[in-house]
Each structure stands twice: as structure tokens, then as C-alpha cells.
Length: 498
Image 1: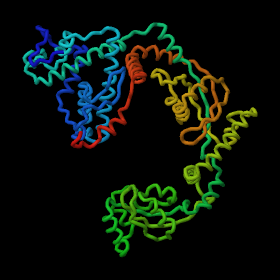
Image 2: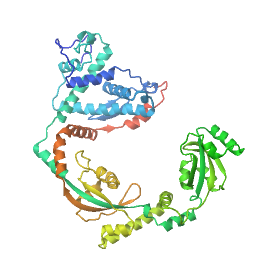
Image 3: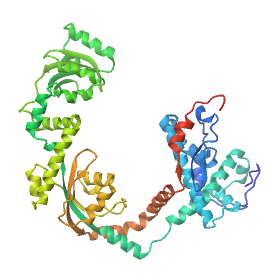
Image 4: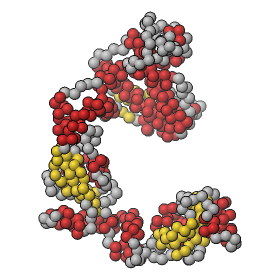
């Protein structure tokens, strides 16, 4: 393609273009943003890195020197603004350029396969219709175009050439019509659902007496220390307050009234295992374990800054503990003693499953064992999260079925291949709990069918775009080496030999 400085376009009668939404208009608006900014890469990237290849698709390299790649990187940098200068921002800029370039290469290859040709005439039309070179009246101005910076015009044209064919392929896919049979099938599938009930075997049923017994055996961690506190932004401010407390000119509670923290003052009982989570240096917890009533501790660095504590009481967790305190202790035990808790959960799960195998009722067993039952409303089998169908993310109030099917794709098959009343084998959740699910009744919801009929045509172009994107990035020829290349090549420090 020629890029002579005075290349003239093949349109003698430009028309006003304020409302037209052609592919040329779309390209022009994007390019207007792209090339009206100056893309200044960090110097680390500019030295000797021009041959960087991030991957390939359909046998074509996706490289730093690709003009389309650099233009897309400019666009991404403009969107991020000053954030593009951070490591995370730079990664996002180049990753977006990488993915956009990969998609464009693939789409242009599809265009070649079906014989879509991008002629000079079509590119000229795209430039004229873009509006980028329009005058104040909204009309293309040939003089404005011819007097434009040569690099700007060449960049604009190169981007248009890359974008036109890929845009035509995308537009054709998005505008494809569905047959009546396809819509009827989607309606039928969307109207069918199934209900479920489940229990989660978790540390919440760890026996009260076992919790108290564990606490008495590990008293250091289960000291419930009564505290007052005052927090400061700097250690110097905290030490000034501490001096006033130590010389008797002020009390800690009086100091707490002058701080900006909303949690200062009388904060009451804090278990050592819970308090440790607020300390920046975990070893500082030893001061609380050995403290006596009236002791002043600190300043210690906490999530609130630099905090001074006053000890008001230090009893041990005992049989008078509240259920809230016990549940906090159970959570701690599950974290501190994972093997012990896992053994307990396995035993309780086996007990539940054995009783079900012996013919006992699911709900009765759950009640006897202190397990609450979660009921999930009718949900369509939807392993790929089709946007017009319900998902467990919508219907499961506790999100456990959603979590189970997210991390184990086969579990959704078990849920829909069984019959009403079946109790599935326990599923281990990511948080360590065990999920036991009972299959409920199959349902038909005509309102869902109506919703699908109404929305399918409207959302189909968006879904087609998602499908197209999925197909491109699951193409067996797509080689994605972006992350490793970015960190090993683009972040290298330039040297004289580069």
C-alpha cells in the first residue's frame, strides 16, 4: 500500500457524516482517540526490545513491532492515564494490545478464507466516513487531510487496513439471524429447571465441650483480654501519648478521646487468637499473653497505626462462653488444626451418609445432627453460564452449589443426571467444608420461556461476540507467551549490548 505524502483519496464529493454508523465511522472514532495521543514508552522498554514476540496465532507472530499492536497499546495507555506508568498498568497496556492484535490477526485470516478483500477504495471510504478529517461543518476536508502530518496519516491508514476486514467478519457474525427452531429449543431449555436442598458439614457443628476442652489445653491463645486502646498515625505521636500516661498526667482513655480512630477507647474482651490478626508483628502477641490487669502495652504497630493498649481483664474461655465466642473459637481451631478438623468433618459426613443409606429421611438426619438445610430454587442446567438461563449464583442463597460447580465441572452433571430424592456423594468445597446435596423436583416455568423469547434476539449479537472471542482464544494455533515474555524481556534493564 502506498504511503506517499500527498496521497489523495478517491472521493470527489464528500458528504456530511454526523449520524452514519458505518464500519468506517467506527474505525475513525477509535483511531481518532488512538493517534491523537503520543505514546511514550518507559525507556526500559525502548532499548533493544524491538524484536520481542509475545506469541502467535494462525502461524503469524504477535510482536512488538506490529503497527496494530503499538496503536492498541497507545489506546490502552490513554484509557489508564497515569496508572499506565505502574508495573500493573504497563502489564495491562501491553496485554490488552496483545489480545487485540491476536483477535485482529485471526479475524483477518477468516476474512481471507472467505475472500473478503480490502481495496484502496474501501479504505479511502473508511477514512472519509470516519469524520476525523471533517471541517467545522461536518464535511470531509481534503485539504485538511493532505496537510496532516505524514506519520499520522500513515498510522491512520495502516490501522484502517487492519481493521476493515476484521470488522466486516465481526459484523456479519453479530448480525446472523436465528432460525425459529433454534429459538424454540432455547425457550424449552430455559423453561426447565430443578430444585435442590443441601447441608454443609463444617466446623460450626464442632461440639461445645470439644471447643472448651481445646481452649483449656491451649490457654495462651484463648485468653480473652479486656482492653482499652488509643491509636496514632506515627510512632512518635504514640510515644508522646505514652509518656503522658506513664507520668500520670493523663489516662489512656483520656488519650483515646483525642485520636481520630473510631475504634479507640473501651474495646472490651479480645481473644488472643483474634487480636493477633490486628498486629503487624505477630510476636507482639506475647506481651498480651503474660500481661496483668492494669498493664500498659505498646505502642505496637497494628492495622490502625501505632496503638497503646491498657489491660482491664484476662480470663480464659470457659463453659460460660457465648455461642458467638464459641463460633469464633471453632473457626480458629479449623485454621490452627486443619488435620484434626478434617478428620472430624469426615467422620460427621460419613455418619450422615450412612444414615441416608439406611433409609432415613434427609431432613430428619440434618435436624438430628444440627445441620441447617439450604433450599435452592429451580435452576436450569447451565454449565456454561448462558446469560438467559438461571445460574446457581442467582438461586443459591449461600453460594455453595455455585462454588462446587465452579471448581468441579463434573458436579453439575451429577446434579442433573440423578432423579428426585437422590442424595449425592459429599463434595469437598474449597473452604474445607463438605457439601451434601439432595435432588429436588423438576419444574417447568413458562415465564422463563417468555423471557427467553423476548430477550434472545436482543442479546444474541452480544452472545455471538462472546462465542467468537472464545473461539479465537481457544484456537489450537494460539500460542500465548505474553506473561513470561513481559517479565523476562520487557522488564530487562537496557545495556550497551542491547
